[in-house]
Structure formats: structure tokens, C-alpha cells
Length: 303
Image (cartoon, rainbow, N blue to C red; front, side, top):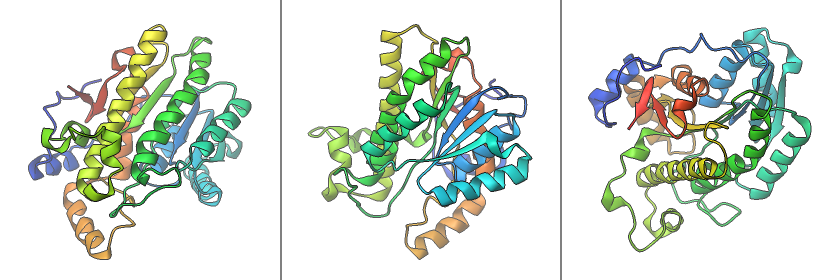
């Protein structure tokens, strides 16, 4: 599966420029026939593009997990039109990742309605220019990208393991960023836990917050993998993470106009399209047991 060896990640302009012009391979060799696939954040950006690929690659049941039912139905209609898949093969389910109770209720509904789950791609995320406290009391990107996503993963594991008992090897994949591997030692708190630091309004900086959120999310992935390896047979469920690279999406929609204009110009030169980025997401969920606990980016593994 490795097209080229991965060097240690950098954020240099040269690396970004090269990555934008050398996107991952489109995983057209994969088939998701007779498989049920869940994608969170599936109505826009990377999640939508990944969902579109799963439909095109034959997913028998595609679950679009979205916050807005209306936007989910609009995404479904577009996917059906683009791929000519059967409308009843796509199901829209709502979940609000700012609330633990919504995550629990979502998984309960999924368990009742879905007999098997072969792929769970956890793609939903937010980024804010200023400190925003969510309803659970945590900074909102920490809540959505780390805590609620980890909770959903843990709650989905029994269904994934149940699916594994039928003979298939399910995939649980977390969308992350190579920036999780770029955090400098002086950015990591020594007198606070990482979650406490992320929740500290007095230290909020949008760029540092983004890096530390990705680091916390990667630690969550590693913790879930370790728990699975301790409690169950290795390879029961393949759990990995992936990075799409810098991509042109609407995730920065809440930033000031001037920032958005600057980033639009910057990304026009140094970023991939959301479709190109989604290739890594889909290919990560087609990897074998050798990918368990690993980080997939640019068609290779990050060390």
C-alpha cells in the first residue's frame, strides 16, 4: 500500500507545495459491497467527499451522521445523483457532537437500526478563531474533535466487534492531522493535563489550540488501541488514524473575513482539494491488520 516512504512530517511551504501537487492515489481498487459504512460530518468537506467515494465504491448501506437533518438530506440527494446509487442505501442520522447525551443517543439508535457496522470513519470536527465554551463546559473544538469523538468510538466498539464475529474485520478510523506529530515540547503543559490546557481560556491561541487538539485526539486513538489490544484479540477491529493533508474546505468559515481571504489565496497554492484529501480517509479504511494503531498519510505510515 505504500507508494512512497514517508519522511518525518514538516509544515514547510516546500512540503505543502509538493503535497498539493502529489495527492494520494484514488482508492478505486477498493470495494465496499455488502458493507455498512458510517461517516460523521458527512454533509460537507472531507466527510462528504469520503461518503461520495464509499457510495461510488458500492457500499450497501451508507450512514451519513450529521448535525443538521436538512443538510444531511441535501448531501444524500447529491450523492445519489452523482453515483446513481439506490436512495434507500443511504441513511441520514443526526448527532450533535457538542453534547455527550446526543452521542449516546445516536449510538443507541444506530445499534437498534443497524445489524452490522463494517466501517466507522470519524471525520467531524470544528475549528474556532476564539475561545468558545460548549454546553458540556469544555472548549468546543476539544469537545467535538476529542472528547465526543472518543466517546463515540468507545460506544461503537461493541457493534464493530459484533460485526467481526461474523467473519469480517471492521475498521474504525479517526481523521487527524500530521500536526499532532509536530507539537513542540514547550507547547505541552507541565502543570496541567492536556485537556486542562485546552480548556484554559487564558492561554487560548487558535493555531496552538489546533495543534494540541490534534495531539489530544491522537492520544485518544492510542489509548483506545491499547485498550482493545489488552482486552481482545489483536486485529479484532482495525483501529487507525489518517491525515488528508492541508485541504480546501469550509472548516474556517467562522474566522474573520480577512483571514478567510488570506487562507483562500494560500490554500489555492498550497492545499489539496477536499476530494484529493478524502482519498486518504477512504484508503485508510481499506488497509489490513498491519495498520492497527498506525497513522496513515500520503499513502504511507507516519513513524
